[in-house]
Amino acid sequence: PKTVAQVQKTRFHLPLTAPPVKLSMGDAITWRSGDNTPSSEEIYLKELGTALAPYRTADYATAVGRLGFLVTKYPRSVEATFYLGVSQLFLNQPGAARLSLEKAESLHRQALRDEVQWFLSVAWERIGNPGQAAARLRPLCDAPGPYRDQACAALPHLR
Image (tube, helix red, strand yellow):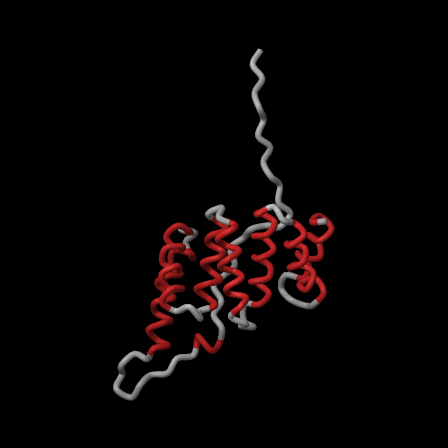
């Protein structure tokens, strides 16, 4: 009889579910110039919407391409950088996702703070470093927020 190696699928404790698109109020408010010429904010939002369209339909490969281009064009865009990282996670690219999410974190925007921390935890767990994942979850567990219950429930499994 032949011995067949069984591949054991890695079990992750942090679920990977796509967050809905969320824009910070500063980026969502746009101003029109007096001559109906689109403002730079309006142009950015239109380009961001186009880049996020494949993300919304779970076409993460296309989203990575479009969002990657947008991050290059608008390096201070926390939304483009964050959704790039999430899309990279769905493509099983946790190392690239970690870099994107750490860049989003470095932009110091409050609007996506908890989301960035959660998905950084997911990236670290998928990289194989549960200690770093737990370090990102602890602040989420200790404060009220949308990821509190999930973070607290996952912490004991990441030691």
